[in-house]
Each structure stands twice: as C-alpha cells, then as structure tokens.
Image (cartoon, rainbow, N blue to C red; front, side, top):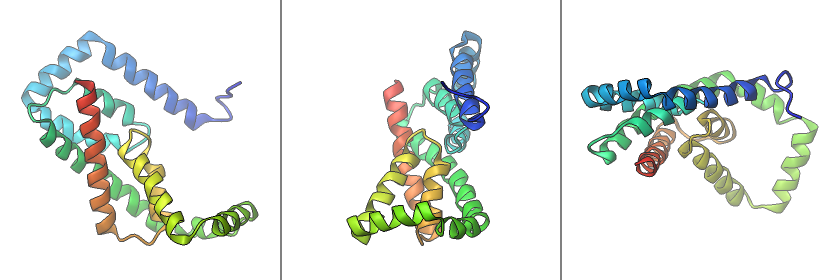
Length: 184
C-alpha cells in the first residue's frame, strides 16, 4: 500500500497532476485560457515552457500546451523550448555548483561502487555514456521532471553548459511540438 508519509514528494507530485487535471477540465478556466491565448498566446507558451521543466509544475504546463491553439505550432514549440531552456539552465547551474560535493560522496557508497563495477565490466565506456545521454535526453524531452535528466547529465558527465543548452533546447522543443501536435 502506498504510504504518503513515506513518500511525501511523490504524493505532492501526484496531487499536482490531479489538481492540474481538475483545473484544466473546468469550463471557466478553459474559456479564460482560450481568451488569454487569443491575445497573448505565445507569451503563455513561453511561460508554459518554463513550467515544463520542473516536476511539480509540468502538469500545469501540459494543460497550458493542450489549451493553447497556436497558429504556428512550429514557432510555439521553439518558443516553449526557449522557456524550458531557461529553466533547465537554472537547474543545470544549481546542480553543477551545489550538488557536486554530494555526488563525490555518493560515488564512494558501497552499493553504488558495486553497481558501477558491474556496469563497468558489462558495458564499454562509450556505451555507458551513450545510454546515459539517451535516458537523460528522453527524460528532458518528456513531461517527466527535467531535474532528473539534468542531474544525470550535470552530475555524471563533463558536458559544457553551452552544449547542454543546445541539447536541452532541441529536446524540449521536440517534446513540446509532439505534445501540441498530439493534443490537437
């Protein structure tokens, strides 16, 4: 049985999904967002892109993308991708400068050392790196919390911020494009 006291973050995340569903299902909210979208839709898409990167706000971003009706879906995806890029760069810098000491400590944990040795003996360095980037890329492009994918890249690789920015922008833009296309 799921214990909300044992998993408070997952509980809050599940509640945000439910709350976003309830809010965006409300006809009053829908009508209001349609009116806003008509006058400042692209600004709303940019802000939704920023929300798209954070786990607890992603359900609201998805609702905004679904409710938006952009004239140019490609432009909307690029604009949303820029919003997500800004948020991802904030996450990247926060993790790179605030979490590195804990990543170094974590690397020395027995369980992780055993797992690392198993993976190192099973897969080559190039394959491990490739799989890490594929998994992190999938997480960043999807509505899953970007914090996880960014943490994987920022904490486990030596990627430069500029390269990460390009990758983040492209993946988020593609994810937002697919989300808008599928919702219309």
